Length: 477
Image (cartoon, rainbow, N blue to C red; front, side, top):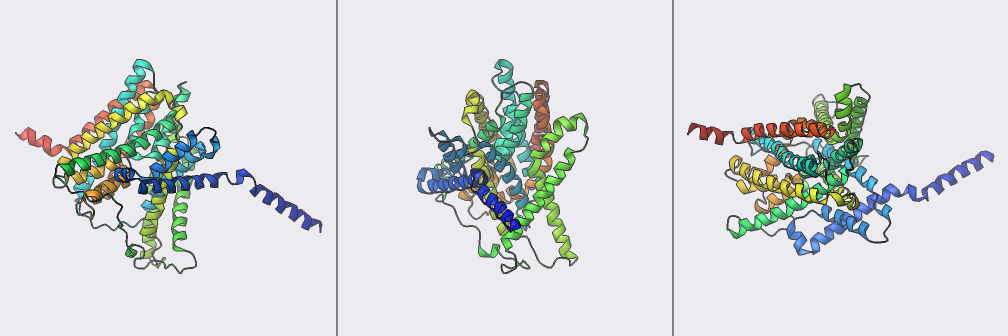
């Protein structure tokens, strides 16, 4: 009887703990994100101007949550900033793992050289964004100390990489600035750039489309979402059926989480190593921010092992499903955008508004001009398709690029869509050293100046490769 009473008391304590707000706090944050996303989608569907602007529903949802926080008398903990930042961080990594696990069976319309050139164009655009952003903030710091000198490097992270990387590097830069006695809201600054990037990519992209239409250069269809997936995408040969003892979708979730767990074990093991001064001060703090990159790497390895197991008959069925993995990655990136936007605190940004606007405007102009010139050179038979897809991706995400492209190439008849998908690997290879350099810049003002010189040299090399035919043609004349 005594044992029974003890068990009852223990159960009562457990039941009581579930009734506390703390037991609901994290789940409520996901509920808030879901409400924001649904509300953003309704707003975009029902307001013609927003629908035609192509601004993502996720961004509108995040903006609505920002407005919710601004209502007088509203409790601050309704949208928990720290929780939103953590969700943004992990949504980025999980989304990339899901993409890496896909079996990319693409009938390529793009030549190998075009793919390499497109990857180089992506990396070089990061560099020109870094040059413009860093150059602006170095000058602002030198003449008035109105902003952290290295903060301009968050431009390629926000524009080129999106909210996840903007948050990762913004947090790193906040820590480095704090060590030097400088007040800088790095996470908010980076997330704001990412949010503005979505607006730049969508609004300027739509304006450009309308200019081309009025000139009679293109014929833009009604700007509505189009269904591009069919039931054939859901079930391919040798895949596990839905009637298995475990749901097919559960398998995909488990695979993604397993690979992401490997990322944690890998990064955590490196953190315990002695890597010297450079490794401790520069590399180690950045490794957690590379969760998306390591997720991609381990996802590719896992996919290769699954393929190997099938060849040696250790596995008889295909366990990964492209359709469901696409849905998982899409969900993760939608959540990332909503949470990343909702995490912005304008109170911490008040004194940085002018630098923020300056960096974003200069970045938009430089990105537009550079990509326009590069598209004309690299994609002579589909200039507008190539430009819009790259501009959308390099100010927002790949989804933004695809949305803009679909308005003038709804059936993806040009190689532009393939370029966007296949360029990822060369872009990652070229972009990884750039990210290491970005980790060095915030250590001192001198380090930022050196970084500016290095990224300028790297940009000239990559731009020289992209425009090599034009350069050599001029020399022959």
